[in-house]
Image 1 (tube, rainbow over the protein chains, first blue to last red):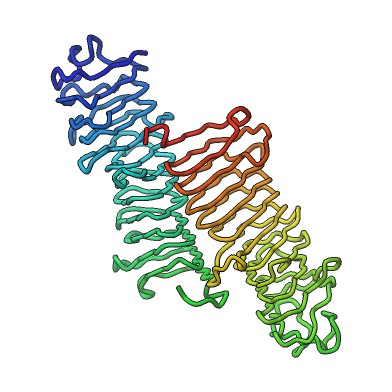
Image 2: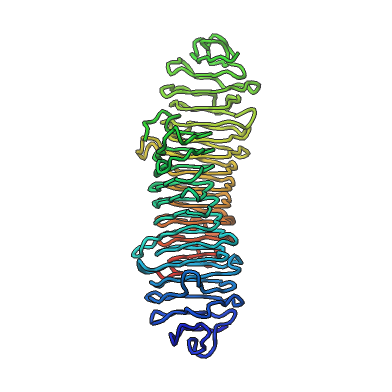
Length: 269
Length: 266
């Protein structure tokens, strides 16, 4: 294991001068420094290599890869993008225990993930686009940090559990089995997106344009189905005081709605 | 044919006395309503052969149902306890019950004796006691339109809870909890093992079990405190988002910790 620091000699990943003499090997720690003046754009198929760490430093503005030309590894134990550039990443075996941290530090920061997503994904700031088509991300945690740009996460992948504590998550063509908590954040479910179960807390805004959900526990926030004119069915929903459900009853059917404030005779919220 | 009958308590506190009801003693399938103007409460007794459709105790009813020594043993598909007195109840029959509690009684609004499993219990106001060997599939501690501190619901439990959803009020849970969603301004003391925990809002979690927390995720503004008991702990995986706090004794607490603020340097 060695530390390999990108030297910005050229855009060729396989240029040894970019790495101080040795191209990164399995188990290496790779850093794209804040001082980088050019990013890797050529020779990006490193699919037989599994670095231990890939870190794009805060202040780094170069792009790594491009749409249709991602940097490909077998897997990475830890990936952290703290830069302001775009980073296109593909992992062949990402779901083998790896973690990914998206901490982009400016509006232009983007982490675009294809291939097999890591097991654990943490989005703190910047834009994360999960476009992986193989495998499943076990856990997505979206949590902003003070002084950082609110995170935007676009989900075109399969996610098992999501915890959304700030920013926006847009489920376009992907799926989330359970949003275990959404609090002070926005969740947009597109017609082609799928979220099976949701637990909402204060400040949550659910813009529901897809089917379902099958199970909704609304303890706070607003769940709004009015953005789509499609017929939808919500199988099991529980609304508690402080939560609001907004829908056209001719379009949205609740198979089983436990409306607690109504049952308890409380004023409608 | 199922009927609806109202408790008046005209002659005595005996459940099985027809003169205490305006439409006869309730039997299986009936709806039993307690009149807010009833003149006395309902004595505890064994009515375990009866499975009501609904048992309703209204706001304004100031007497007790059952007693601390003798609960009312009866089954019901739906129970709503909104009175100011106490309800001492043993749930009998099939486990399909939903129970609502919304009472200004902050001492003993509902005191359960261990009985059949309860599918769902919603506590808005009032104090609820759940004994060991009482299982509850979903316990929700919610808020009503009364947000005064004196109206905070509280639950003391030794029972097993599959899913705890709370965004207001407090719980002291001595039994096991499979999934705990502690949102809003909820406060929870867990003496028993919690398997999965999500804390959001301004939730405060006092965790005293020696094991558990296979997955625990803490949002900014929440607190997970394991320092109230100085015992060795082996916990699972705890993720602390920036702005959340996890208090622990480093020398005796073992867990897989993801401290995001420290990990990413924010």
